Picture 1 (cartoon, rainbow, N blue to C red):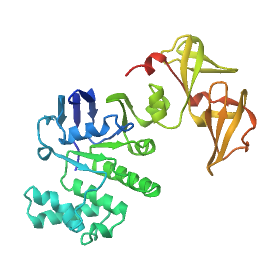
Picture 2: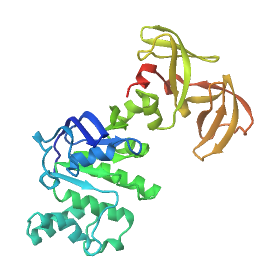
Picture 3: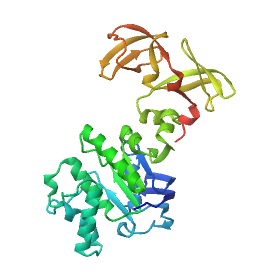
Picture 4: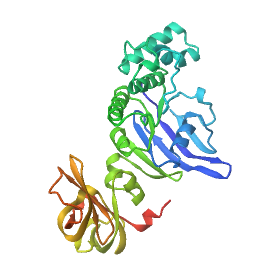
Length: 352
């Protein structure tokens, strides 16, 4: 089994006067997993439904494997979708749930059941065919939903918030299984989630959506380490955003002042003057030259979290291993590791 390329050319969606999705371009290469990430209402589920054929695009073209499928109904596209609710038939056993799509499309029942049994083996559920969905755990039901989609051998597999109903430990296990399955079978996957950790764990590329438009697209590392805006930085994990001053720029490097601190960072198009500075919590080190007061201290086992009151606003600091404990009300100094800080020009943040 292998997937086909998905290409969106100027695809947009309106509901009357409301624009749910601004015209956008996107390419999902064959055999890759691309995640649509963003807050509620940003357009990610709308985009997924357009690709699935459950909604009709107001403008633009959708191509799958080079074929224009924009006007094709959902059943005419070689696409399968795994829903948040799993949508299993409670009165059918697992094997018949998986075989249902094949039987509905005209495949003989005996052949459909053989293919369904093989696919259950692929997702680690060999021998579970006679059980009812109610006799399975949440994670097992999710794997049945994946098997039901896989058995149709789609060019493109769509996931709509598939792990949101699972507990934290099971969610971690299932995302690893989905990623391993996608890589082993060479599937092309478009995956929707609002969970940043989930997106980073499974994706080849992440597309961050905001207000129906693409805010930034790239690899998980690119989006985390080189966000194009404060919004993207905040959506790709914890981030402190402060206003700093660029003192000078030379050879692409900026000398940045934040109170008593001086940092040398890639300029990223910034010139002298004010700019947004994004600092990851793990890059804040206690014991530096810039004054602060601990307003909250939380021991998290693997690390300690401190909220600091500073002249630049509240800052979140994370110290691996817990570090030296500091009680709320303690006066501390802090410094910033340049590796965890990035400049963002004001003009980039204003792009929408």
